[in-house]
Length: 426
Ligand code: PMP
Image (cartoon, rainbow, N blue to C red; front, side, top):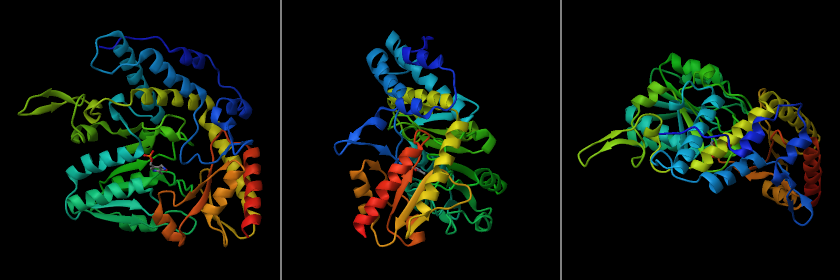
């Protein structure tokens, strides 16, 4: 039984805020870590948003409020605190449903994040329905989280894994995609926005074509939802997943959307408490959706924190997010293009706020370390996309990834630090 419970104080504060013009300084004031100092007096310039986003105060306060006032386990308690926790947890599911444009809360499964969600689909749907000779189609620009789970299920079922190649701009070769797509293709799983290159893939076209051969489609939306409005019904995605921590929310929580009929047909992944209806030693019947896929005590605070993050994103507005990031991407690309010997990896016509680059003769780790001394947080490495690095014949890149709370000054400080690092290393 769930009893309606008033808005939490932080949410009341939030509910009365009317979205206004995009005021970057006011927005930055909401993010405490953007004002942190490192190496003495250097204010952090946070350009590692593709790894994880920073958190606005409302998300931090919501977690604090939950643990201070409502902490309890969900679904099983008749007492007031449990009802409050259950109400807040399930309300967060409703927010995710609206965020993704899903039809029903039953289609929203809370997971630890994108990685767990892909593993759930591979091991529950994939392992159940794939047969020897069936094909799984992914792309050359996938994150390891969308490669390894498919290799595992391929080894378990005898299915084949095929890969859509990309060109040197980091765009999928759609002609090859159409050639690879056959009646044998049972699952197509691709990244909506690449974390290593920034490429925005033509999701709707891929999904429609995959449906044309009867394949089921999973979209890895980890890098899409922080930057653009996603509507799973408009896309007609069968499965769609993201991680809260990349879109202002806590770590350890994310969501898997699945079309209801698919989820109904798919067996549960993990067994345990909450996912059951009735248990005897002889047999067990399972709970209804979405609980069938949520064994054990979930990350209750995380889900509620994700709800607060989604509310914040709505307040900012995706038009503003996209505009700010597009401006910064253009500015950053122009500034980097002026640097001799610098190559940007990922120059797709349709691209999100990722600047992945190398400078001739300099190891990206050295660039990253020197820039860190100036307070600049970039990421260096293979970005969990080693096949992308293999495509370009490089071990790693330096990556600056943007969020709507970055400003032009961030870009200037980053480029200034980059020049300094190059001078020191050449
Ligand atoms: N896919 C993409 C495109 C990503 O960028 C990431 C995170 N870097 C993941 C999947 C995995 O996300 P998580 O580690 O939150 O499960």
